[in-house]
Image (cartoon, rainbow, N blue to C red; front, side, top):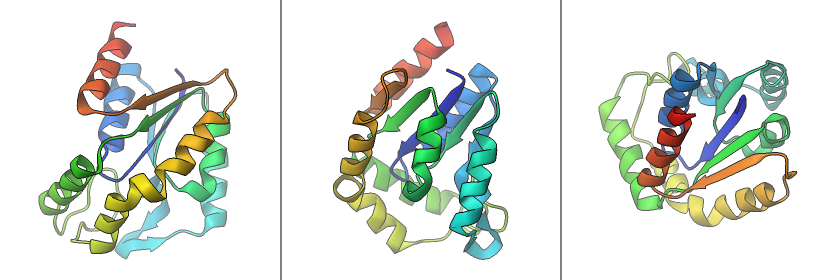
Length: 170
């Protein structure tokens, strides 16, 4: 595990797992939200997203956390390990709401500087609909990957913790 992609719904725990894995494996962590959002929630262009990701995947080791489906192939093709956090939407929605309250009017550690947390109903709707709108495409993409990649689909907080425990043992 040297090049790790973390994908999943908002609130699934991608950033938290990325930080924990980065610390345990001593691998740099890149949060795509932090790279692709400028102050006041101004997004970078798709061309910039592609450029940044092509540069990141050239590195020897990395953990990249984020979805960005339009550029996901860059990361999936370069990764040796893909972790899909397939956490139930009730849990993801609860965590997203909790995060919105916890960081209200402040910038989260995994977010672009100057992007203060706010109550965002469109985001909550995206999280709630993720299992129907995004999950099928992700599962299809994962099934099409070459066999030399390790794919982990973790469906609960317990499975995530077991995965972390096994990584720590290695």
